[in-house]
Image 1 (tube, rainbow, N blue to C red):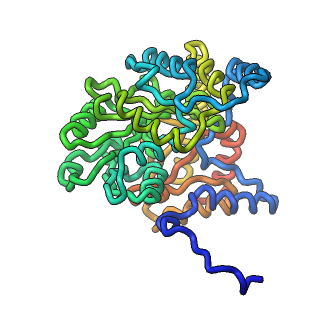
Image 2 (image 1 turned 45 degrees about the vertical axis):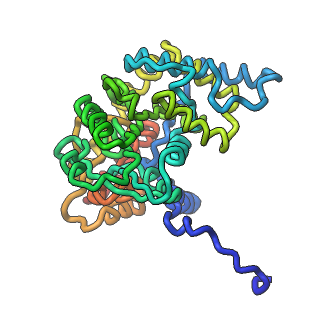
Image 3 (image 1 turned 30 degrees about the horizontal axis):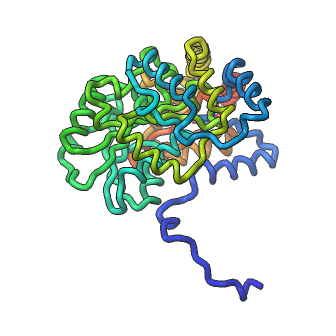
Amino acid sequence: MENNQPNIQPADRLSLVQEYYFSRKLKEVAQLNAEGKDIVSLAIGSPDMPPSKRTIDKLCEVANDPNAHGYQPTMGTPELRNAMAAFYKKWYGVELDPKTEIQPLIGSKEGILHTTLAFVNPGDEVLVPNPGYPTYTSLSKILGAKVVNYNLLENDGWQPDFEGLEKMDLSRVKLMWTNYPNMPTGGAAQMKTYERLVAFAKKHGIVVVNDNPYSFILNDKPLSLLQVPGAKDCCIEFNSMSKSHNMPGWRVGMCCTNKAFISWILKIKSNIDSGTFRGIQLAAAEALQNNDVEWHREANITTYRRRREIAEEIMTTLGCTFDKQQVGMFLWGKIPEKYQHVEELTERVLHDARVFITPGFIFGSNGERYIRISLCAKDDKIREALQRIKALEW
């Protein structure tokens, strides 16, 4: 039968990307576990804690309503949009019109897709941070955009290299992706950076998109790009409930910007999906209420701070150096000079210590000398990882 198969080939765009690193590597980890190796995973940023009881109770309440299971408006329910606007007002001091300046998303990845489709033609250029979230690059390539990397500088807290940006030919650039607090580096959001980004966007006619899901994790002062006067005119901000509210599998995010930009993104989104289940939307609105936000914030800061101390000991044991001021749910560290390639270290940690940590090269060439440790594992698992690593010579 194989000889009779037609010569069917995939689309050319598949040659532009690879299977996501974690998708590939987790297959190997699963095989090791099947062999009885009991791998401790400190690689993925998927919160292991649940949402609040109020959030779960609301989901169950709506799910039990026989009238709640129909299609929902693509623009989101009024309850969710109002809750998102109130969230931005309380925590960032940013005024948003819930009817026209907020678009609920099925996670930020969806927002990256829809925003690129709304603003970028094939052949246009997008600015992507190096190191940075791999999806900025992969989705841009899939959609026919040209990726232009810009450097984040370690000696400046992993903030953009604005001098380097100004030396580039920016004539074909439509979008610039930023991500503060930064993943993977843990670089903190800085108001001076936000102010420079807004000025840069206005000067060059570029839409700056800030991905902001980590502002409540080990971070005492949440900031938003939209706090800068005039930012809404030329900037977009994504936020997510995956990290701040322990809801990664629920897929609830938000896009915040001006009325025109929202309408363009909605035009794309309405042709791709049919809206999130009503129960998830109303439960998300419940989670965004003041008491629940404060509950999550305190729980996340306390838990991640405790885990961070153990992760720092792992980094030190491996001979890595790191900035103690970094924020977020990961710890980013530079590997010793004795290793020619980061996977010399991460593969030994995986196969000898049976601990899965992330090599920094997956985030770009500027991450090639770094590793990332996730804090999204129970305390006893992180301690077990530390003991396994301590038992070996490094």
